[in-house]
Length: 98
Image (cartoon, rainbow, N blue to C red):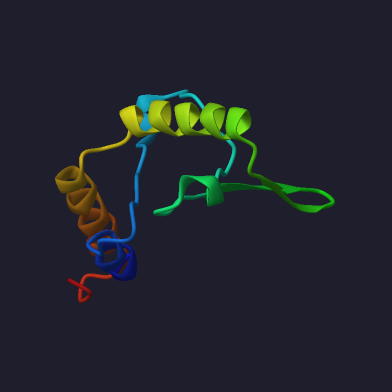
């Protein structure tokens, strides 16, 4: 938990937490690693399948995945609430950790 909290403070990492209280949300149950950078033409989504990784880099599917991630982000906790949740969970798991 401490490492998650530290990673969330890094400029190149966006860590979003969607609490169980939200219930169902767009994209629930799937992982959508979206690699983006300074050159949009190199953006890629990695989809894990039973046969291995599948990489998506075509503009139309990338736009769809970006929209899905935007909807997921709307369900996520604000960064300050996320930090509080992580500390709360960690304190329950290990009283000496924080």
